[in-house]
Image 1 (cartoon, rainbow, N blue to C red):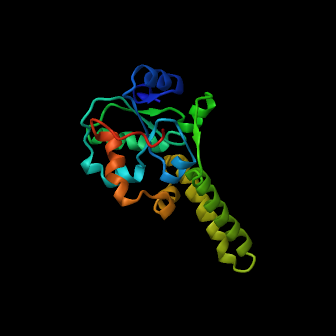
Image 2: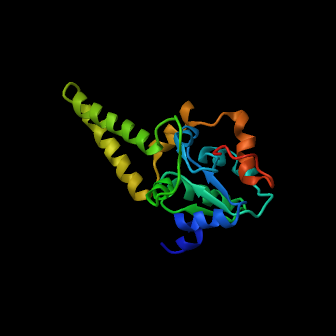
Image 3: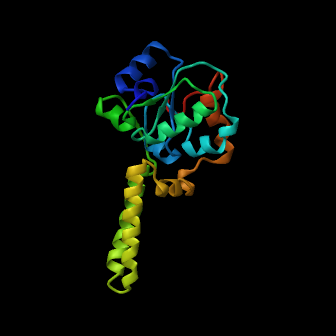
Length: 199
């Protein structure tokens, strides 16, 4: 993809950067539950929905390198575009996301949290399709529910967006408590960020 080399970094490059520059900020933009389940040691959780809500307030008081992380790279790229429009141009995306990081055998901290967003989408989409197919035996128009979900998933693949994921991000277990927002945003924007929530 044109320009990808300027906006992304692979796992070996990120590990080298964090080794040579301890001020590098690893910002995980997944939901709080996903972050709690597993994350890169030393990373901070600043969810994408929080960045969207406070996009007009984003301004960096530092020039530290910033590497954005999500499950596969899609949400991190959305976050990078948000930050770039706010003037934070030093952010890069971890190519392949946490999956790529683990594929290189890089360390990950595990805890107890919620399912990944991809897994939540698969559960909801699969349940709706099953309901549509089985339910159509009793009420025939329900077959269109399965077709609607299939069309939505096709559009999500083609457009590289996911409306269902955006809706699931609104559920309480996927949202950041409002009182934590300033501190989380500070890990991205403040000159001296708080101690990492991943350490």
